[in-house]
Amino acid sequence: KAGVTQTPRYLIKTRGQQVTLSCSPISGHRSVSWYQQTPGQGLQFLFEYFSETQRNKGNFPGRFSGRQFSNSRSEMNVSTLELGDSALYLCASSQGQGTDTQYFGPGTRLTVL
Amino acid sequence: AQRVTQPEKLLSVFKGAPVELKCNYSYSGSPELFWYVQYSRQRLQLLLRHISRESIKGFTADLNKGETSFHLKKPFAQEEDSAMYYCAPGSGNTGKLIFGQGTTLQVKP
Image (spheres, one colour):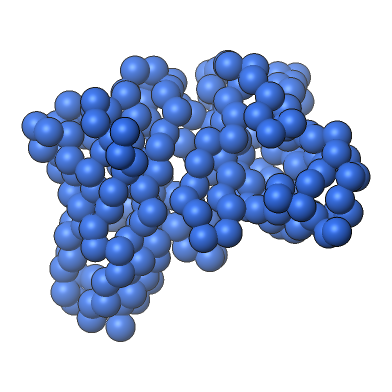
């Protein structure tokens, strides 16, 4: 099976702009989780989508949002970008039953100037 | 609050030496416990999970509910074990993992 893919892999934006990141899960997986990875804060959970519904949410401001489509592909959006949003954004997919093993994508490196 | 502590940022050992990467957690309920690993220039991947009780690449992890610890161990480290290791409890029935800060394991020849 193909692994989790994320697009784009690299992105440069300026403060105040918005950005959309995309994640395609492993075929048959219904859950997609998003994480932010920074040197200072490490890996932090953003949110999880399961069957097109947000099932869990981390402690991030409302500028961070996401959605999931009927084919389980997911997007996350960050509006009004701040310098501190520069990070590696990882998505992970799982079958979604209980606390399944999560399979991670390579990440999208976002740089905010 | 849910919290995971990996007290060592860097652990450096010689090849063939035993390894123990510490993980302590503060979590309500009975979380499922995972160790994930990230090798250089590779994506984050599962190393082992408590419920399966498998030994992967010679690593094992023992859950101590009294101490709320889930330390990762290997009796004889190999150079290819050099990587970043993350302890991560999972929230029941959801895809939410709480990651520790990670420990870089450096195995010297």
